[in-house]
Image (cartoon, rainbow, N blue to C red; front, side, top):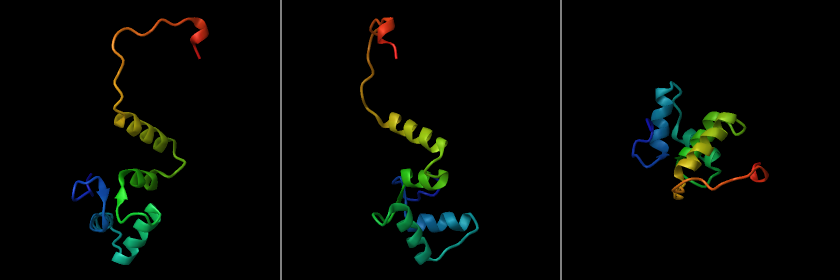
Length: 94
C-alpha cells in the first residue's frame, strides 16, 4: 500500500521507481520496465498485489502459500451457514 501511489492495488512504473529509490537502489526506466516484464511475464505494465507477494516471498515459500490461502478465503463471498451444524457420526469423519 505504501508504494501504490494511485490506490489501484497495483504498482506501476512510477511507483516502482519511488520504491527502488526509497530502498537505496535507483534504477533507470528501462531497467524498471524489464523488472515489471519479468514479474508479470510481459502481460501487464503494472505489478499486481499477488505478483508482488510472489516476488517478495518466493514461489516455494510456506508463508506465501498461507498468505495466498488467506487472501483467497477473504475474497470468497459464499454465505455462511446459519443454525446448528448437521449431526455427524464416526463414519463421516475424515
